[in-house]
Amino acid sequence: MASPQAKRQKSAKDVPYELIYWAGLPGRGEHIRLALEEAGAEYSDNAFAGDSAVPTVLGYINDKNLGDALNPPLLAPPILKHGELIINQTPNILLYLGLRLGLVGEKEDADAMFKVNELTLVALDGLSNEPHDCHHPIATGLYYEDQKDEAKKKSSDYTKNRLPKFLGYFERVLKGEASKSEWLYGSQLTYADLVLFQCVDGVKHAFPKAMGRMEKSGDYENVFKHYRAVQERPNIKAYLASERRQKYGLGIYRHYPELDED
Ligand SMILES: N[C@@H](CCC(=O)N[C@@H](CS)C(=O)NCC(=O)O)C(=O)O
Image (cartoon, rainbow, N blue to C red):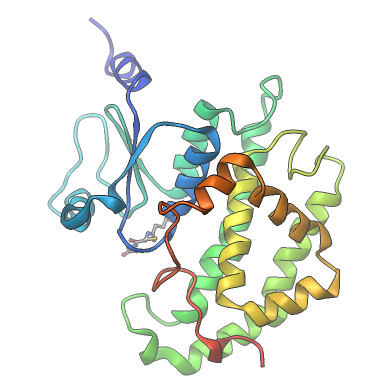
């Protein structure tokens, strides 16, 4: 009899990917969409499921859901379902997709997945999680309006110290010897490039003045060049112009003018 693992791999092989995420904002789900779009993969996106979108997410994460024999319960979206496999945690999903969709670089580089994962985790730390904490520095469960003063302090520190640190890091990565092309690692685009693109795009939306100043400074020339190069990838360009690309709203990247630089 086939093991559950073998059965899962067989059943997952030919079925489309299913992205399960909240409706109405790009959020962390966007990293998954960009990987699927770049690879031209077939997928469904629960964000466009209308009235059933939110109940579907809640069905996966509610505290009565104990998972199943193959999958532990899930904490939060984005969630990827592929055949019988159901996983969450954005970088974890990207690792799974990256290996299947050819987005971890050269096949002969056995360690590539760790490098690509590393770059992804750094980008998500400093250019996704920290921007989120700028508008919610005290508690995710409270409204922004209940933590505005702290948000202002956090954002000032972010645009003055943290943002330059992370952009500077990726500038070094792009100038470094392990980047053998216009991409972050090796000579092929990997999902880390897509993650950095989405992070830079989100931070540009949240802090347009701070990012405008940084772009003008020339200190992060390669990062902004990299951003434009991802934007011009044919599949990404078509996706960005499509209705599947949602507008920023009350998600990770929020534009509150009072939190940006003066
Ligand atoms: N580290 C997780 C974070 C997941 C997460 O915070 N998801 C958000 C939406 S983007 C959510 O619904 N969180 C619910 C909660 O934290 O209570 C990841 O990268 O996927």
